[in-house]
Each structure stands twice: as structure tokens, then as C-alpha cells.
Amino acid sequence: MSELQIRKRWFKNGPELVVGDLVLLAEDNEAPLQGKLARIVETYAGNDDIVRVCKVKTSNSTLIRPVVELRKLPIDVSLESAATTGDGRTQNTVNNS
Image 1: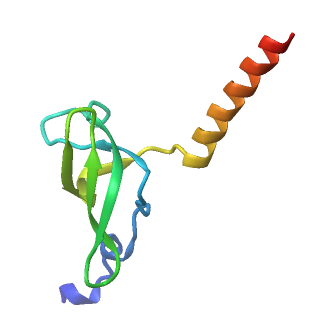
Image 2 (image 1 turned 120 degrees about the vertical axis):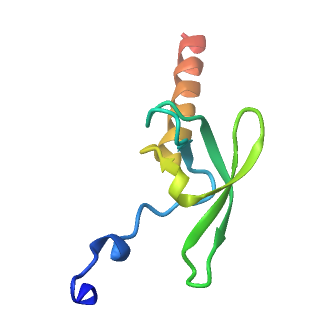
């Protein structure tokens, strides 16, 4: 009988994690937004070509964590680099005036 019900949880994919993404490390004994910041250095896919494990770099160390313990931050890497370029242009404009 239990096989007749559709389990949406197992068919839903989370956000795809790629190298360079900024994530929070989720810990069982901490509040959801109190985790450490880390950047994904390497990803490891399972037999089904879905990323299951990531190597992440924190300020202190490099760790290997399963994807279910990582919370992707909604920051676009291209926007982050564009903001840096924008700051540089602003500084050059101020120096030239």
C-alpha cells in the first residue's frame, strides 16, 4: 500500500552546487544561519551523475561534507566579480578627478 503514494521528497532536486559557490555548513547543534561560511573547491558525483559530496574550504580548514549538510547562499559568482570591478572603476574615476 505504501508504494502507491507518490513521495515528492525523493523526486525533487535541490539547487545544483558547483565549484566556487558560497555555502553555509549546517550543524545539528547550531541555528540555521549560525553555520560557518565555506566555498566549494571540488564536487564528487554519485553513480547517477548527481553531486552528492563536496570538498569545501573554510577560513581554517578544508573539509569534505555531504550536500545535505550544505546550504547554498543566493549569491551569483558573476555578480560578485562584477561588483569588485565596479568598485575598481569608481576608485579610478575618483583618482582621475
